[in-house]
Image (cartoon, rainbow, N blue to C red):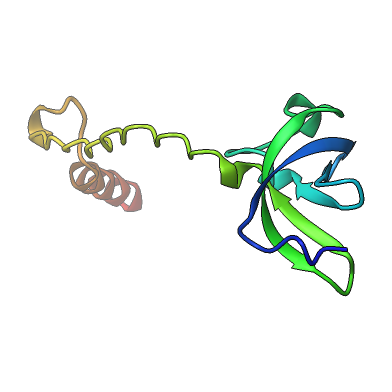
Length: 126
């Protein structure tokens, strides 16, 4: 059945069926292969029906031929050029902390308040 196909070959095929997990592609009159949903196109595919319909002519690459199980694994994305990666954006620089002089900050520091509280508490003990 599959001895005429080998890994690495690029072949024209026709989509014969679509399932949530992938698409079946006829390679010739007697051989079908499966294009897994992850091999349909570059990037994430949520719904394979957004990319393929039964009857579509597609170019596929043979990924694997399993003679024992009579299965041919195919890829459409392996026949397409990968999209250019978006330009890297500059990472945000950390914000530099500006230290303020606590005397001018508009509030008392804990150290100042602690001294005040100690004085207040000692007046209650008398």
